[in-house]
Amino acid sequence: MLQNMSTAEKDNVLSVCANCGKEGDDVNNICNKCKQVRYCNAVCKKVHKKKHKKDCEEHIRIATEKHDEKLFKQPSPLEDCPICFLQLPYLDPTGKKYMTCCGKSICSGCYYAPVYDNQGNKVDNKTCPFCRTQTPTTDEESVERLKKRFEAGDAKAIFNLGCDNRDGTDGHRQDHTKALKLFHRAAELGDAKSYGSIGYAYLHGRGVEVDKKKAMYYYELSAIGGNTVARYNLGNDELRAGNMNRAVKHYMIAAGSGLSESLEHIQHLYSNGHATKDDYTKALQLYQTYLGDIKSKQRDEAAAFSEEYRYY
Ligand SMILES: [Zn+2]
Ligand SMILES: [Zn+2]
Ligand SMILES: [Zn+2]
Ligand SMILES: [Zn+2]
Image (cartoon, rainbow, N blue to C red; front, side):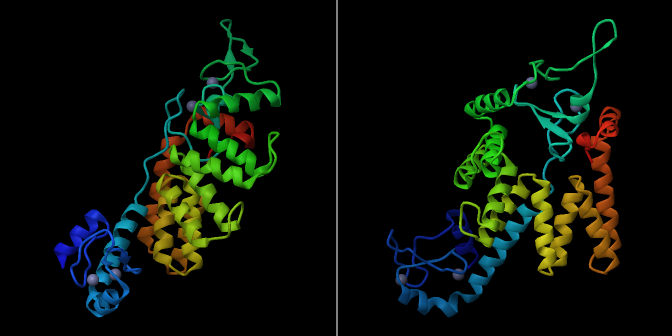
């Protein structure tokens, strides 16, 4: 049995009938529960059903375990700001800004920081703090720049264009089908947030039929890729379903990625007896470690100046 299982895992599915041993491409009647075992026809499948039951459950258990191991891994922290070299906050677009000139994401602190001339006088900062390109003065110019980044295959630009098509902003007509296409493309290029947007489209039927299962599938991909908001949504979903253990696991990861609301949820679950004191202490520590990594005087100054620069 064990030997069978490891072969099945390697090739995903066996091309040998688990009942009669027949081999070949036409052995393609797959067990629809575990999807790990094949039969040459429905008769073999039926005959083998009772014998396969235990193996089937084991296949499912292992697959779930593997899936959860991947799902509940703390994703690596976000990239650093290319100017101050401090970790970028997850908050978007107040904590960081995407620059359509160079395609860099810059923290609110560096974006807001005043620029001085060589006499030490403050000058009007109208250039990108990273590449020093003049900031666009018209909407058309912004759109044109985003288009250029899009053509260069920049995943974030593709995602932004997807959002414009979804929301009908920046001179785009609302087009959910086109938006979805763009989100898929950006996701394939590694933009985790795009997976979240695909999930949202399936959840609310924007450009596709409502499909909760698919929505959750994409939210999971997004969360695994490091999208904190998708992670938080998964936590809320488990909470609604009454799966407190899984909810806590999601909230724990989201707290470690800086989402303070998930810390509040864990505190609440603790006071209701659905989480332990250790859970809450750990979540608090993770959140504080995150804060320690992202906090800076410059970012505080920007945040104190305006809500537009809030970063935690
Ligand atoms: Zn057979
Ligand atoms: Zn099975
Ligand atoms: Zn910075
Ligand atoms: Zn720039």
